[in-house]
Length: 167
Length: 167
Image (cartoon, rainbow over all chains, first blue to last red):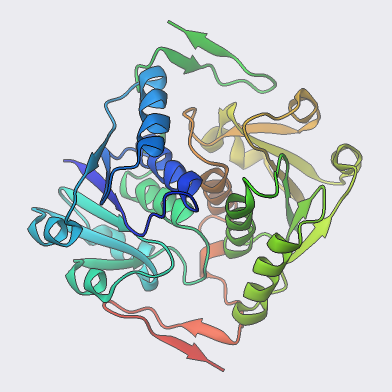
């Protein structure tokens, strides 16, 4: 089973940090890759250098024609949107390989029509970063967060300080 | 019981959107207010106009001397940090009025020392936005997302389109 996250509506300067956070959330919560319609070297650099240190084989791919990618995806396409069905009602139906589509404020109608599931993380405005985190957390039933990434750097959880072990 | 979110390390230009997302997550997932050490009118405007339309009584307060605020807080101070104890082990101990401290990359040692609990949402780098969402989701046991905010605008969840009802 693979989980891919397609980030739509990324504007290189305005969204740099939000899209980077989406990439980091995708990785930390158990997804395999983030897909972007267009190359953005800043995002790729930030995320790849983190993978280099913290482990796992998370990657960023450029998909170009994202509509064809969604149409051709062999698996379940989930669109995260505040207008969709509550995650706790819908999550049980999502199985197999998953493509999670996260947009920004304006997502083309195409995505609603071509997703297998339009899913909301609450029906209030918040953030694509938190929506993705909650979706993946529910999808992996909390296990995404407990994964061992086998990285050069590892944190030893502590009640009171920063303990980082390096290989 | 009240839940407040103190956002540290906000840099007005660089962090505008991240801090706004933190405010929206705080509200959508059930917190009562976001506290900032210094005034930022952009953030206040974005969040307050959203509250005006979508309801609830979420507010933003300026605390000035945040160290005194943490020290004087009558309740449980939780610091969200990737170095802390796993949320699923620690969350059961967090009760009563809560002050959740979310920082940026560099959080002063003071916060570690003065928090009642240093809690991690996984021990991998991701985002303060997702960390706050998962913490509040666990703390309210998923109920934060189901709250009725009684706003002028309301979404009717849909499998296939955007349905917004206005008062």
